[in-house]
Every structure is written in structure tokens, then in C-alpha cells.
Image (cartoon, rainbow, N blue to C red; front, side, top):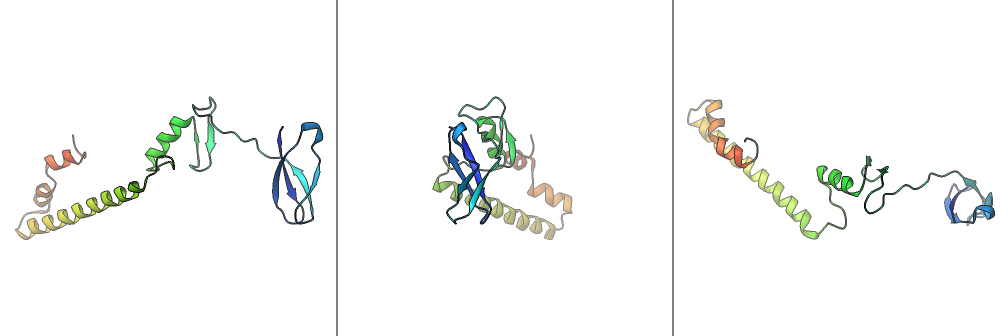
Length: 142
């Protein structure tokens, strides 16, 4: 049985109901007492577990996704976690990583200022703070 959508002319409430194709009325009664007209609604297009060959528009992500695996890649790229993968430690881990980056930045600024106070040029001070080994460890240089 197809699902039909109705909109009340009095309160603008939208309702959905199942009817057989040959038994669907054009009007139904709304709980507010008004009459609801049958309206044209979009067909729900959702992906199957292994993906739909045509893909679909994911309203939560605001983008077109090809299948479930593509959706996971998009979420990972945006730093999002699905509810099924979410655990209470996730937020704490993210906050700890941010704090670690902030603490490292504070140490770098302190070290840079110390090298400048010793009379080193800006370039020399930067080279001391951000040496090649450290940049390689941080993944900023190969």
C-alpha cells in the first residue's frame, strides 16, 4: 500500500496515511476539525545497507552520497561520527587532542621568545623551534 500525504487547510498540519491505490480519498478529516487535502509528496529514496546503485541525497550531511561506504568516508573527512560508532570517550579524546595541540603551541611560542631574547634572528629562532625532525614527526614534512 502506498503512503499518501495530506495537508490541513485550517492548521497547515501535514499528515501521512496508508491507503490502497483505488481507495485513497482526496480529503480526510484533521484532528483540529478541518479538512486535509491530498498533496503531492516526494518519493523517499534511501540507500540500502550495501548502497543504492543511484545514490541518494543525505539531508543530514547536506550532500549527495553514492552508498553507505561513501557516506562513511564523507563523515570521516568532515570529522563526524555516526551514532552507532559514538562512544562516551570520543568527545573526551577529541578534547584531549585539542588541549595537547594548544599546549604544544604555548611551548613553541615560549621557546621562540627565548631564542629571540638570546639575540637570534626570526628565521634562526623558527628553525630552532621547528626543526626538521619535529616537522617530520608532526607529519608536516617528509
